[in-house]
Length: 506
Image 1 (cartoon, one colour):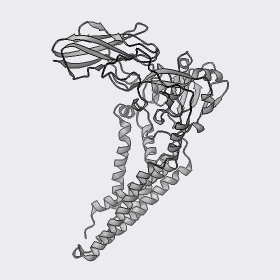
Image 2 (cartoon, one colour; image 1 turned 45 degrees about the horizontal axis):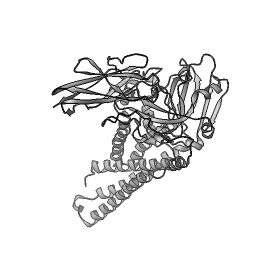
Image 3 (tube, one colour; image 1 turned 60 degrees about the vertical axis):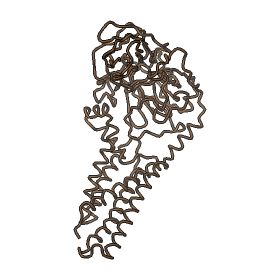
Image 4 (tube, helix red, strand yellow; image 1 turned 90 degrees about the vertical axis):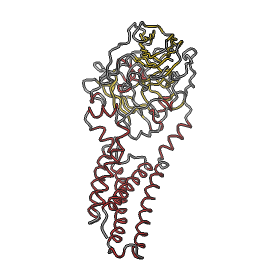
């Protein structure tokens, strides 16, 4: 019989992905980083700045792991083809993959040599699976053409399919099991449910909502709040294990446990967060009731030394950002947050503790899973995103959006309600104006502002004739500054420009 290249390629791919599935299951069980995720982290951290910024803008994190898996599929197919001659050749390909994966695992923040056990066992499964399939495939394909469809051929084919089914079943079982094996994930959920934090449930202040269908709720539910971070696998950190170390240019180093933190006087506030990647009219923004402890008094206890102007915050997964020290200390409600909308922080939003600094974009302030703060100077540090061309200080820029009507809508002519939101945290919005088809500006009615750190809703009723219309919006802040019409990209420090929508009145 002819030795089918496709069959051997399939065998290589199946064996390779079975090993990956076993590695994934074991790392979930042992609460470690899987080899694929570790490689993705290395790719992220060592990619050129232009590529990282393109990926940030184009959901690159969502495609990184699929691309890695596609590359691995091609490599595993090659291993299978080499296995036609000798299984040892296929094993060498799998070994190279394991070495690369192991090196990536060791590069993970906090990795230990024992983390390589899951990589080694995954390699063993790859080689053993390839050997089992390859041996039976060779026996089947060694038959002469006249034996095809004969008794011996049917028996060997049945034996081959049985092994393939067993290997595929092991891969599926390992993948499914990985969903249930995370000990720390289960422990974290139980811990979150048992916590009795000294926080209150959110009560939406009267007058902040204008009750316009289509305008996003003034309070953003936690499960609808935007998510932006660099983690391919979000860390699982227990409150009982959490510590924050404050050191560097300070008179006294401080180490806080979770119990130390929540025993301090608490603070709660409505704070709007928006991402520096939010384009004009974008939806990377949310408003929540945050509960925690003010950061300024803790830093004051540490005693920042003369010349210090930055706080380098570091997450448990190694991500970092540098925050202006004077901003944290200027009286705003910069906090170590432990709760969101009255409940312990969700894992995806930084459980057990994250940092929030109103008025700054998160890339210079909002550290999820924060475990370390070094008081230092901007001259001495080069944080994750500033290494990649983003601005150093990251103050939030004034913005406003039209949410009703949506771009491209068809509305009834006559009285048309136009509404949306506007924000500039820690300054506040004083007015919003709307322009129709390049004409004069019409002032809008504002909802009540709960404080300077939240967005405000606005609305205006326009009398529009039939036809195509374009409406633009601009805001004015509490200091009298009018939102600029100049369009700027999100890089290096946030987008600017008026948001406009076009629609038909009929």
